[in-house]
Image: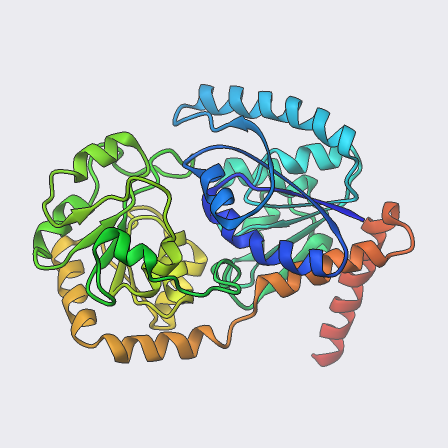
Length: 370
């Protein structure tokens, strides 16, 4: 049984590495495809994941995104027709679902960003089984074309999978001249993302860094333009090559990010995080704030004040975060279970009926409880 996994973003490499390991241990053959984007292939190389690279990211413009995606669908389709996988896996992905649907390959998708409406509309209608954090309002999924029979919620966040099997390696600290628990990690706004509608010219982190002059800051820019902006700060370290970000997050005092994934990875590792994202917050972000494990503000003074408080009471925050995170469901377990469910069904072409029966049984059980 061959499972095709399409990885289109650097965090997705960490998300799927545990899934790949568990499926291979169960005897599945794995085909990984990817694209050129934000050092993604270097991350896959670092993780030891074999892959075939097809296409690239289209940049920040709509025209660029459309042309790059269209070209990638064409080239990737030819590869998948030749490889003949039995099941497709992906996360927040507009291209693999279309190819899988067109070739009648049953698919399992994971989504945790309900605000990426254009991407979701290209993904949900073609996905056989859609897994999502249950804190997301189902209506947000249905209005983008999700089949109610396809849905499976989990009590957790994607980044639990990202830290699967993680073991810290202090060599990255030595490489960057850092000591354990002596620095902050930062990540600026995702200015190339289609869902981002904030200020693409200036980052809020530019106003926060001067308020934290005594702390070394490891910063991961998303573009060359962002890199040039932050190079002027004396206490900012920008790694030149792809490095072990999970270890850096593990040993950091704090993560401050204007995006989402690295914030949640930090929390999954027990490290406090402050979100400075300027737009509409995701359901998972709101949930983590309600649980008291994450903080959010776009006011530089408020962020700096909270940062110093977290630095002073670091052990207390870490203990609370780890207690909450340990109770969450791991997406790796859920995805592997769904892959096995598809593979063991007597007729893969009957997968839609399989999930319809599952949905109806779940609804009946719920009604009985009521």
